[in-house]
Image (cartoon, rainbow, N blue to C red; front, side):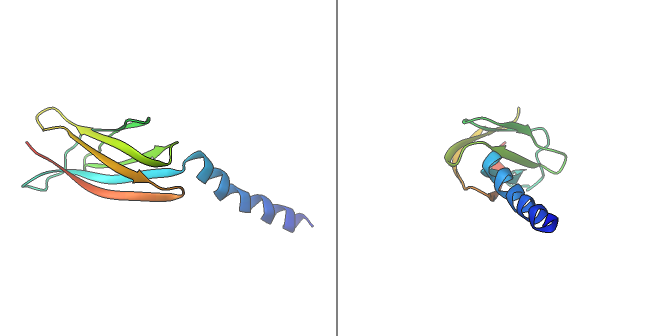
Length: 101
């Protein structure tokens, strides 16, 4: 009986996590032309969420919103980028984003 209860509770954990973070965006920001990572770029979803890229240009952004969202990437010395992305419940959308100098 306890094993069934524990299994039932464990089955609910992924569903609860998906409900809390329906969409996730992960990627790298690089410099166009050289493909060098852009460290310290701000990556922001207009619907909420802001992170900064690490030394490899990588980032992960979780969103509480599902569907189409506006993504803004900026760093001093580079041309800012604004694009539309589609966030999907329970999925990680990945991409490589190249900034112009």
